[in-house]
Image (tube, rainbow, N blue to C red; front, top):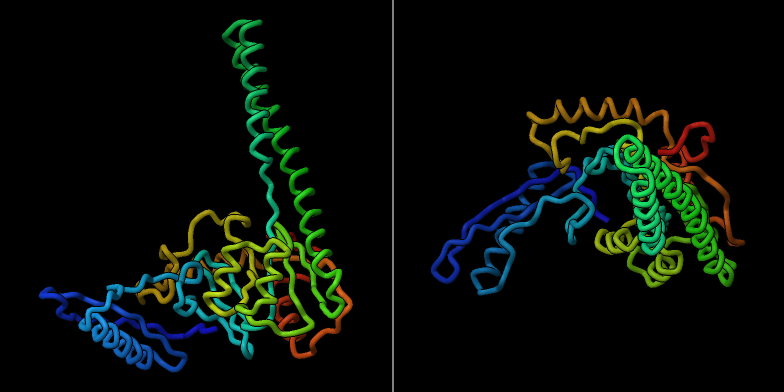
Length: 323
């Protein structure tokens, strides 16, 4: 896991098959901006040598954050370091915990009714609307019928979504219980998130690329994108603060996109947005602790990381709503 404090970019031009090719490469460092620039110069020089030998090399690296970084370090503002754990601010402004060997996985619930149910409901509403319109005529009564159909659809769809969430949560718990049934040495902390469950393993350290980790992800139904990014970044990750749109903040982190670092002239707008976000987010929790599963023993060295997660996410607070 690499989450550097400093970033830089270097460029050079190389002659390839009679044409000039401009190459750009990033550099990074925990020490200084100068060290990051020196690494960028070394990386772009290496790319130029490969291009001159006839190798097919990308002209540039995309300035991306965590999702889709494709082997580059996590490009987010570092807010704090706690041993091997790093807290960063992600592209939409939330604080995130990044850890190399504390196995964390989120399982999201599906709230959409199955496609067959949705199609059947839509057909039912059309038939009801047409029946009322043909039998009573078009006009004010027709408008009332259309509104009634819409309201009926909203109520039914909401009911289906709620039932779907309950069913999805039951299936998720079933997968977790089945996985733990024959693993008596495992110990898992279970949390509820606004859209699903979060699991944190506390009995042993795991590598993100290890076979046990990938088996666990598949067994419990972890998000495939998250599982892939754990492999790419060699770390696990958990959101510690609210999603902005869930707490009434409709505008995006400034500037857009919120890729770190930003130019000095853009920092005041970003800092103003962050102050407002942190003020609003303080009233919310990112998840809520539910229970501990499994008969294994906690690894004492991991408990400090768990305590950090619980404090930053307000997971032990039963009063604050989740967002």
